[in-house]
Length: 176
Image (cartoon, rainbow, N blue to C red; front, side, top):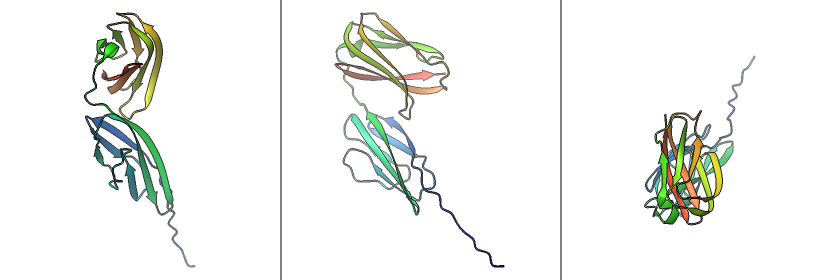
């Protein structure tokens, strides 16, 4: 009896995580079954074919990063928004915002030093950019406090973004 060996290739599944320090974003490729990669960093720069590249952006802003993972069975694409915020100018109401206690284990407060008479969005993200919670509030009095619960969060660093009509400001929050 003759035997035949059959090799079955699985299609690729694209995936990545990212971390940002200043203008530099470092991407960790988590794709499976892929043999080649193509990265578009969303800023008009040439495509990159490294497995897990770093990229330096030229300006603050929001960029859509696209990864195409390919093998002999085809390709898979995933996208992720990366926020580069360097030298954020603290203007108006954003200058008076405080976060305490930080680090925290269960909850922390966002305090507003001056009154804000506009829509406010408070968003908590993990370092991969996944939105974990969002609060929408309006018209905060000077000295107003908003409490966020982080019970059940794994120990680590998180990003808190506060957006008003006059702009946004991002804070690092440490959970232990």
